[in-house]
Image 1 (cartoon, rainbow, N blue to C red):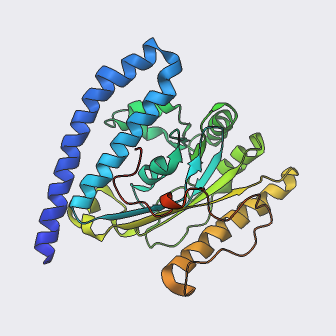
Image 2 (image 1 turned 90 degrees about the vertical axis):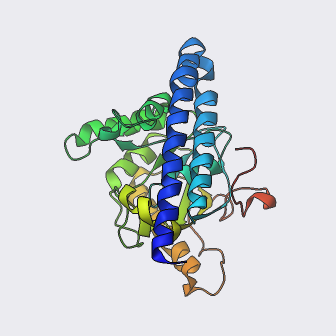
Length: 288
């Protein structure tokens, strides 16, 4: 297919995503938000279901533009967990939401998304996502993350790189936020390793280059947070090394996808999830 046809196909899929956003905004404003006010106990189930439906729809529409998505493993969010992921593109969070069962986790994000972003800003409030501005208010960011780690019932996702990668490589971790999270509460830690989205990292890229997305996300873990706080920096380094190793394996530096080297804090297998039928999942996902 010529580059012009690819561009037209990409732009058409993004127009459809825009229409889907508009319809989703009506459902959010007239359904999810009022119901969450009237029945606070339904806040997380309703918001989670809504987020998953929106995520599945967006990825399905992007697939019409030539994008490809795969997911392997599940994130058990019936009880609190921490999720650490590398960050390549705008769809990383959507993939995580669809791998999380039964609830969508909250995620650490920038304060600039808290207002005036359609769908996103309201959803952040409903999920009680920690909002941070580590450059202007590092202590406030740490406090917000600690509060989320302590109180959120269905998991907390963080991208320790701080920004999306521009070349597909894992950026150095900015450890302060992750240290704050891991030192607040000892719950299972899962990794999500994503690849294939970095060429289309920005919204402007999505307009014309949707066909370049070949996105795979995989769950690894669970891992146990060390009891000794002095071991947490080494634990964080090992998390990053595990992500780097898995990416290298996936990209062909190892002939087949094989388990990573033994991880000193691994309390389970190397791959999350227990249903073999869910290990390779294409859109639309089952039960989304």
